Length: 449
Ligand code: GAP
Image (tube, rainbow, N blue to C red; front, side, top):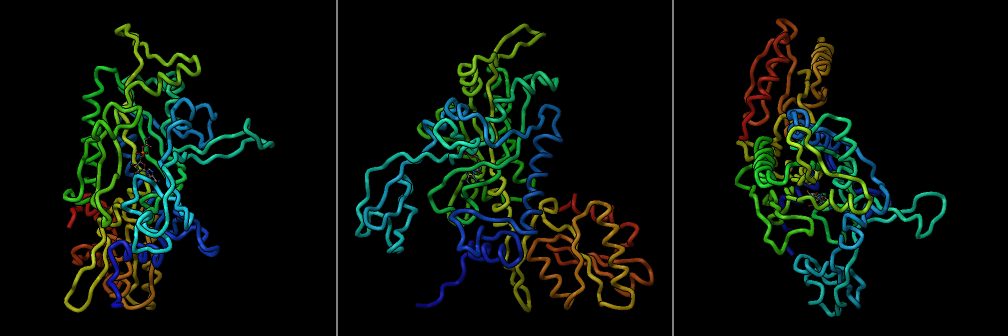
């Protein structure tokens, strides 16, 4: 059979491993399904995504504060939230190969024994669908028994609802206001994940925005629009983004309305982030279950109400994957092809690479000085003095470094460096004394090519 050319996803997966973005977890033991580790560049990419999210959701706003709640909470939390009873997928088992598949996603599944066929279309008979809870169970304390069962959180949101009163009483906030959190969540996902699109542990960026009940629709529209725009501001192709309103039949039990920001992945349109109007469902349920008063009293208007909640909830790893897929290009040049990631400069794991033109004549020492200056100004810098300069450029293009700075004879004579721009490949001479403001301006002026 003729060898198939690699697909875009194959190229991304291979780049991730080759350049230290993402590795299969427990690889030397044969791996573990749907679980990945992030290498030196991957961890920087995740940090940039989280900084960009936190910047837009907390730092730049006067009406949102942050939180970091525990992963393991009192197990009753998950009974009240509906996760113990209802956070499940319908699953079917193949009686022949013993494979387990999501009954509502059989279209996307493959028979493990005959990958050209879907489960049920091979010789195996499928069982009736059964509900399979996605929460990971663990035990708290020294004794294992039903009394010690606890869960790894499947979403960060509940930790926010549990602290609504604490934040209200300690932080001088009043509705409309939000509490934002970034943290790991865990789901025992059974369906194949399309690399890091769907994994068993992942980071979420969630914000619960508490509003007077009669302002819910205005704020829902606000957050749908703001979250959609955030992706465009960070360079995602608007033609590959859409905001899709859920059909009433699709809505989660707690939601009055939900819209998903969707991206057109190589494997089809998929959810990148959801914005939900959760009404007063969560606060009311926790109040009923605990007897705690979670009603807000407005001292000015003397009104009492349980706030409604608008929730933008996104996956940090899914965002990082999306930035990568969207930025990836194999560009045909006159003599060769270059692989380039056109990351927004705020998302790129490395901001500037520093190259001495040759490894002698005082250039490495001068280049180290320039690197130290940029590091002090909080740029993420990579120093490289090995190989031909063209090869060094290509290595940086492939990981999305927006600026390469070369130190040559001109630098030694006149303190001027050459800055090469990743997207246009154009070069400019810049005095070292002006390098930091120059790079800051170039970062600020970046436009999607
Ligand atoms: N609190 C609401 C909530 O958790 P969700 O739609 O289940 O809503 C929010 O999750 C986001 O978290 C999704 O839009 C997605 O980006 C991310 N996410 C959910 N499950 C994931 C998984 N198994 N792997 C990676 N990301 C996931």
